[in-house]
Structure formats: C-alpha cells, structure tokens
Amino acid sequence: MYSESVIAAAKELKIHDASVLVTGATGLIGSCAIDVMCAANNEQGANIHIYALGRSNEKIRKRFGNNVIPIVQDIVETLSENRSFDYILHGASNADPRSYARQPVETITTNLIGTRNILDCCVRNNRTRAIFTSSFEVYGKIPNTDIYTETMSGTIDQTILRNGYPESKRCCELLLRSYVEEYGVNAIIARLPSVYGPTMQKSDSKAHAQFIRNALNHENIIMKSKGSQQRSYCYVIDIVRGLFFLLENGQVGEIYNVANSASVASIAEYAATCAQIAGTEVAYELPDDVEAKGFSKPQNCILDTQKIESLGWFGKYSLITGITETIETLRGKIDA
Image (cartoon, rainbow, N blue to C red; front, side, top):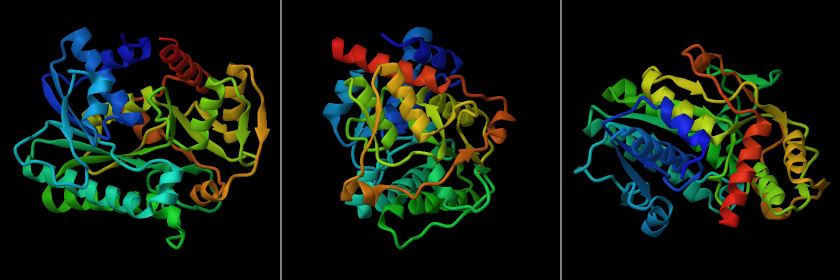
C-alpha cells in the first residue's frame, strides 16, 4: 500500500499517541506528511490522530479515506476553539508561479491570515508545537554569494506582483518569531528548497513539476530559459523527514534550511535528468506572458544545511533517485 520510502520515513517518526493538524493537506508536502503518519499508524500502531485541513471534503476523502479527520475550511477562516492539537504542520499556501501571477491578493492573504490563525491556535493551546513551511525565496537577492545560511537577508522588489509570495512568507516568519517572543508560542520555521515528488499537484506550474509531467508523458522537456542557475532540489520524502525531525529537535523560534546538500543542480541538469530517465530530449521555448509574470529572476540559490545537520539530520535521496521514484510512482498510478 505504501512505498518503501514512505515506510522508511514512518519508521523514523518519533511522534506517537498524539494529535497532528496538517494544513494544505492535499498539497505536495501536506499529503506526503499524512502518508507517512498513516503508514506509521498502520504499520507500527503509532496512534496518531491526523487532522487534515483543506477546502474540499471530497478531495480529502478521496486521497486519504477514513485514515484522517477532515477539517473542511479555508485557512483564512479562524480555526475552531473546540479542537486542540499536539503538533501543527502548516503548509497551506499558494505555491506555484501561475497562482502568484493570477491571484496575487489571495497569495498574500492566505499566507498572512492563515499563519496568524495557526499562531492564534497555538496561543489558545499552549501545549501545541507548530512548524511553518517557508521558502528559499525569502532570501531575495544577496550579492556575491550562491550559498544561503539562515542568518542572511537579501532584497525583494515589492513593486513586482509575483513577489507577494516571498514577501508574505518573509512577513510570516517575522510574525511567528513575534508570537514566540510576545506570547511564548512553541513554533519553528523551515525554509524549503525546490521540492518535487509524486504528490505534486497537476496544477503545479513550477518548471521542475512541468519537466516531470513531460517525462511521465514521454514528451520532450521544454525549457523556458537556459537554466544555468544552480538550485537546491529535494525529494518530498526528505522534506517530510526533515519537518518531523525539526518538530522533535528544533529550537523554538529558530529558522532551519531543510534540504539535501547532495542534491544541488542547475535547472538544465534537472531537466536533463528527467529526460534521461524518460528517454526523451530537452528543447527550448520562450515563456508566454502569464508564465513570464510568475517567473523569478534567474539566480543561484543553494541552501546551507549545516544548521539542521548539526542536529543529526541528513537528506537520503539523490536527485536521480528521487526523480526516478517520482516518475515510477506516478506511472504506477496511471497503470492502476
């Protein structure tokens, strides 16, 4: 029922006999986190009460069946005061370039209001420990470096609408740290790299998601640029492993880059890896106007992972291993 990588992640899970809320439950990261907890329940008797928050009860039930307790609402709505949780994994957010371009207002308000609702929930229930999923994009432009540590802060041009995503994520980080300082909230921040995996949404318009769909369909992979910029890429299983590890071991109020130091590549190299696995080729094509509005400016962004690694966590999945498993898993769903 579960892949070997999901079962392996479940075996690492230290959370047992607890209630866990996952926002963005049917998204790339949230759905994988729930899969890992479900595997821990079914394979190891972990007794985790999983609350899956999303806007569609149908999507939650179709994805997870009776393995979760649905909370059907938009994250911008206040959470019920009648529920409390031991842990919250907050992943609800617009998270693809087309959404940034077409729904800049919703992108900003979902991040800001949704995160405040989660933090207010933590204030009401002081036993709750939360982790907020932020993004490498909050670093902005930092001159004269390609490797970003948690203490660095660059510039973000707030006159560009697509920057509502990183600007609001950055504000959410400060909001969380303010709640920690003012109200004693037990929460931490995880800055994530470019994440991929079989739980990606069909609507995901990020370049690396499109490349995997091209490979899955045996199509040539279309590049919208030369793709020379270097990025930290990370298989979603590694991301979920890192998030659960930080829920147990991270220091309150701290920021941690969660990435695999052995999975750094240029966008062109990522595309070539997908094409190699699929037996197709890489082609080049200019973006349309809507896509171009959602694109970030090319720059290298490699996340320094020394901080989380100093706690004893390391990524397990190389780029080729992660992409291969992603494509094989998605092909298996098509064939089923």
